Image (cartoon, rainbow, N blue to C red; front, side):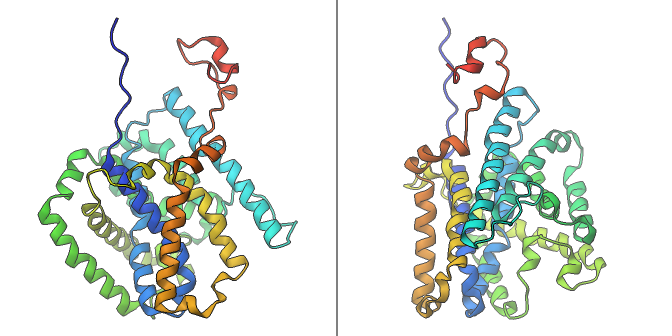
Length: 351
């Protein structure tokens, strides 16, 4: 009798990258109220926002290389992306109604609220992954679509299409990468070169902080919404992509390749992403940042430490166990039995 297949081993490098990326996401959200009074915080904020979501999209693309519309993969897409979107989009809407005492606030599954746009993007990106994989030159086409989105104010906010297309090149690039690309990125000479590049980006962000609108990095709307003419999108979209790619490479070059204390938390980044929005929005709804000491250097460090601690906690196994039924539901009742599986498995919780 042949031995049972062994479970695929997780690569600590990518778990480290996912954890560190999601920490930057929550830090960026926590820093935003501090940017109005601190040029230094604004510089760090702009630098992080230039690459943290592109890095998340690139890693998502890398792990979507094998998506081929097979029943099992479609099932995981439904249980891991569609179902959490429906649950958390509803939960965020109800939370807003309660926190703002606004019972008439509409629930719209076509207009994702706050962090939920990324699940819409992930669904669209992954569903189109086989198309990108079949193309000879997918990245130029994806970048062309991002440019068209940036010059199309009429695209609107439905399904966050501006963002879906704006970050699409990063996802498509991830689809084209192979393990050896990350190995080369972690070479000593690349790591050393990343230091002055990141330092230059930070200095530049500090220099432009009083004049640069962070909205350029969100990809939430067209360039006309930033007060620029449409033709500017032909230049700014490729430029922002190159900047994101450069800083993402610097970030990934310094991600540890070996297991660290936080490596297991990389498996729970979706939990942290979906749950942290409640705390971030609570801080806005109830004016947590009104305390003057938070806007001092010590307070800014405290906010950063709290953000890291909160995201770390939200990625831990106890939190994942408590919320697995909504973030990664089994949903056996919703699917036909797999080929070769007993028919009773469909209605018996996978038994």
